Length: 159
Image (cartoon, rainbow, N blue to C red; front, side):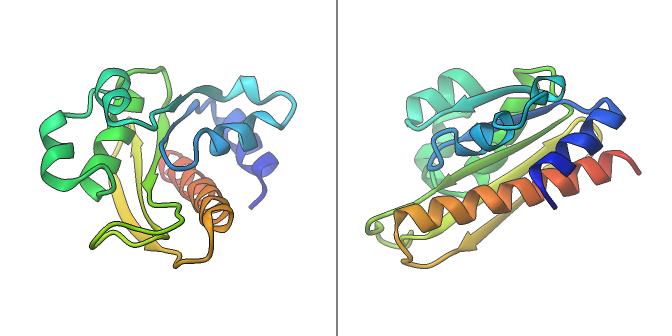
């Protein structure tokens, strides 16, 4: 799957995309908007690096962050759903993780949580452990995985 292919499929189907990113700092949105004509399908991107921005821009409950931590499936779910709620997108992907260097307690470097929300289905979440492969590699792997999730989300909307 290429980014161009993902955008072509979304374009043919009239599907709009949003992103909600923490540890990738907008890299998914950048990879999409690097493609000419992406404005046909890319509705908006939220870079919510701080907990406050997750609450303010996406409506993530501060209690969810306090209970589970910013790097959790619960927060990834709330971020993706907030991106749908606060945009005109049909599908949204979220990323929150520990890019490194180093981790914190039970959340090691390379642990990244993803959410995929759409207007027609339940929100999917998962945690990937890319390992202590360095900040650049964790972020790059996260971008690629987010694009794969978006592709599957678009396919699900077309069923």
